Length: 171
Image (tube, rainbow, N blue to C red; front, side, top):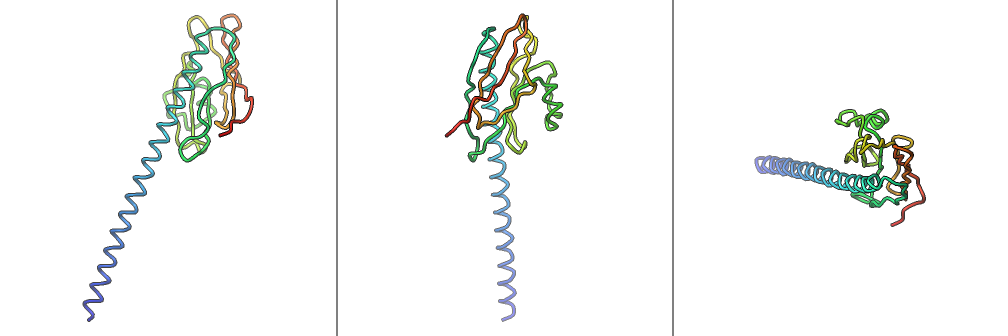
């Protein structure tokens, strides 16, 4: 009789260990997939906003453009959008020091609210086709839940990018 109880205890313990390993593997794989998907989405949003800014800058004229970007990322979470020179972004946000951001370029960085995951895209160099590009209140920061308008002014050989919150976005 004693041997059958010992056998059951060993068998139950072995099943618990296998169950713990399966749960651990599933959890780590799920976290990895969520992180990579969120990063991919944030990079796509950064590319989209950078392209909108490039079109405005290439116009080389006074322009007002309402920026278009999704309200949420993975799990209906809002995110932050940062636009500015590489130097200003590095000075304000510590997590960007490890990135190879050029100090004389304009970047769009889309980051999760907890600054854990982010996507980065260069817009252009600050010296662009005989123009110097300046972001007003460098770096500009706004949430994905805000409706933002780019107001671009050209004064001489300087293009000034101003980001103005004009309202809230709703689903």
